[in-house]
Length: 117
Image (cartoon, rainbow, N blue to C red; front, top):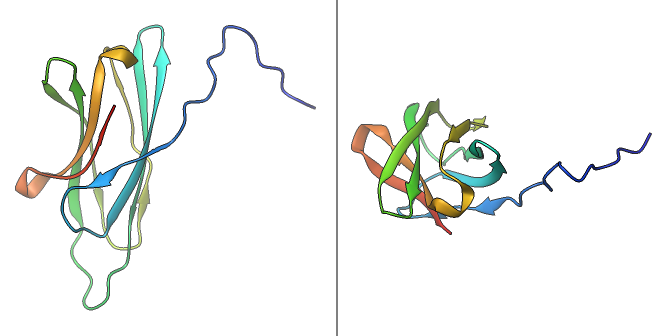
């Protein structure tokens, strides 16, 4: 049976590819969905299998950047070679108040992926 969209259901948000800020085997895309209470943020993060000895598993963190420039931690996870993770987080910020999303390597507090809106 076909699904019928209702007027109150928001259309699916597009996936936006995040840009690497440093060379890394990690790639990601992000989807922001406006909600009545704020924004739902869904990430698809993949860790390629590099040549040579496999690197260790690392912890990553997801940050939302607001229009005033503040960055807020909204999720953490671990990932290693060959893994794909799908972190989902929420923020009280409206979609229009979000100017960027960043993924950091926790160990070095280093932004490895970023997208600006």
